[in-house]
Image (cartoon, rainbow, N blue to C red; front, top):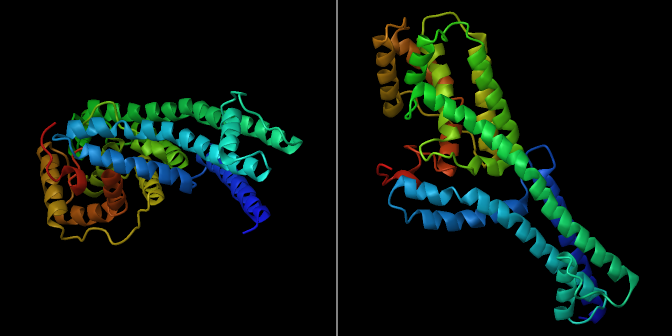
Length: 352
């Protein structure tokens, strides 16, 4: 193959990598919508394979949780490193195509420009010098882009965990829908309570916005090993479903809109992570039916006015099918604590 063809091919590949890296970074952190960026997905998936292998060595859930707590932060640190590596390779090809010497010299020019060292500069033409300056600019831009978005990400994480911690205070460490309903009943929150359900509605809306535009947030783990935003979302939606199906009381519009917001948010976040909606659990699922029967009996023991169990079960099952599979999917990929469906992580779980 003639040398001119090779240089033309190198120039084309180099420019393509530069544009792809730049647009990938913009789509990952600047574009306010859920874009699945192939490069970012490859980085996070590759790192996840390594962390999963190490986490499997842990004997307890707490040990595995400590390992996986590093996954999202390390993934974020690796992302700009991969960006800079791609820029280094792409500009090396471009400088070689422009006749700046052998590949080793072009590599030194590229990295000198990228890291703003100035130890090696192009010597042949104005275009090479202009590209050298552009590489230095892009290198700084990509690093600044991630650094500037870190406060935004941690602010979203902090707001998410505030609701998680508050739910634990209200429903206990092993929060359940029945415990939360009992707390609501003690605080007169089962009637036309507006403030609590509006707060949870806003939380779900924020989850949908932040966890689809910045999907790595889904893998940031709670400060305490036993907490999880997925579990919290499930408890809130289970509570709304139980109240709607089982309690003999007027409908609460604030509860209904909160339930709708939660179903929409969880399904959209789950679909971003390749969740395919299909048939929900069958009505005669013994595990789900038995759990509902226990919850119904616990509520009856508190003195609440309930619908007949069979009638309530049919409505509860219909409501739960709107979010149960999304919850199960998110619990699996985030290594949710206590998830019975997460066979990968918790098949041999012992107490943490």
